[in-house]
Amino acid sequence: MAFDPSYEFLYRDAKQFNGLTSCQAKSKNKLDFHFNASLIEVYLVKQDWLVIKSNKDKPLSLSDYKTMYNNNLMLERFKCIFAINPNTPKN
Image (cartoon, rainbow, N blue to C red; front, side):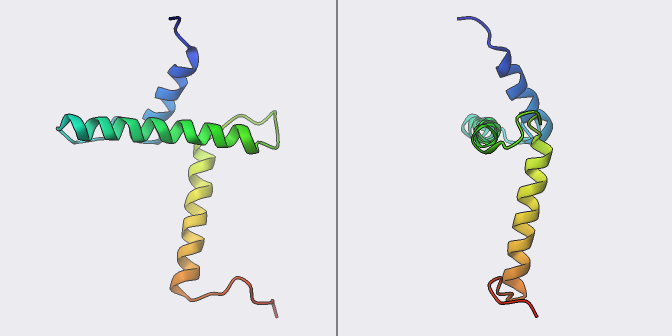
């Protein structure tokens, strides 16, 4: 089996953006779960990017995805805490 260079980018992105190397667990099961979750997250983001990418010239940025999902989470939290109905008409 030949080495696929895309695996190198998968590990690099997982180390830089998903905390692949920041686990402090000692149990083999917990370490396996952490490694799998981190690598699967990168894989799912790349799959999502391939499906919805609108600009074919723009490269994938995991930092942009993290910012986008963090902003969406924050917006949903504000709507929930302040009881904001997003469907009300503007004044």
